[in-house]
Amino acid sequence: MIKIAVLVSGNGSNLQALIDADLSGKIVGVLSNKPEAYALTRAQQAKIATAVIEHKQYPSREAFDEVMHQQLLDWEADLIVLAGFMRILSKKFVKAWEGKMLNIHPSLLPHYKGMHTHQRVLNTGDILHGCTVHYVTAELDAGQALAQGVLRVSHQDNATTLAERVHKLEHLIYPQVVEWICSGTLQPADTGVYYHGKLMHEPVQFCKF
Ligand code: GRF
Image (cartoon, rainbow, N blue to C red; front, top):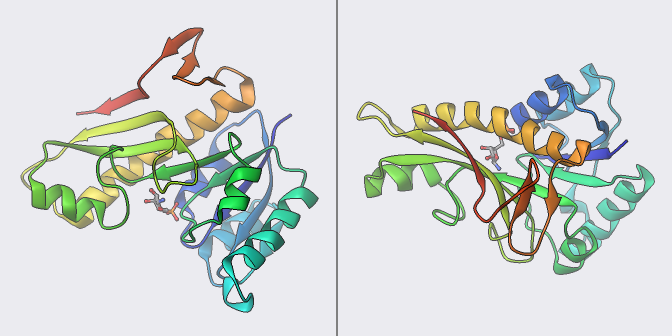
C-alpha cells in the first residue's frame, strides 16, 4: 500500500478531499510549516499523524528541508502530495523526491505559473481556466502535468468566484491522480503518462463547462 504524506500551509480543503476520497493508499502524515494551519485540525479529526516544522526556526531553506525530509522518511512516505504548501523547496529536497512528489496549481499550466492566477486570467480575458496536477521539479510549476481540470470563465466571474470554482475542480482531480498512482494505473514516462494503458502526451483533462 502506497504511503502518502501531505504538505500543507493553510486551509487544507485539498487535504480534506484526499481524506474523503476512498484512496487505496494511506495518508500516513500531514506536515505543516505553519502551526495555525486549519489543515492540521482536519488531519487530527481524521486521526492522521501531524508534524509542525516552522521554517522560521531554521537558518536556511536547506536546513528546514532536511528536517522535513527526515520526518517524511520517519513516516516511510512513498508519495509526497503538496496541497497548498507555501514554501519553495531546495534543489536537494526536490531531487530526493523526484518522481514521487505532486503539486496542484490553480491554472492551466504552462500558463500562469506563480501567484494570483485568477486575477491574471481575468486581466487577460481568457475564456478557459482551471488547475493542473503535476510532478514537482526544481523549476517552479514546470514539472510534467498529469491532469487538468478545465472550466469556462463566465462574464460574471471575479477572482473570488474563479477561486471557488477552481477549488471544486481541484477537489475532483487531485484525489483522482493520487488514486491513479496508488492503484498503479498511472506510470510516469519520459514523454507522457500511461492512462488506462494508453500513452497520453498531454495531461488528462476533466472539463466542467
Ligand atoms: C489551492 O488553490 C492550490 O491550487 C494551491 O494552494 C491552494 C490550496 O488550497 N496550490 P487548500 O489549502 O487545499 O484549500
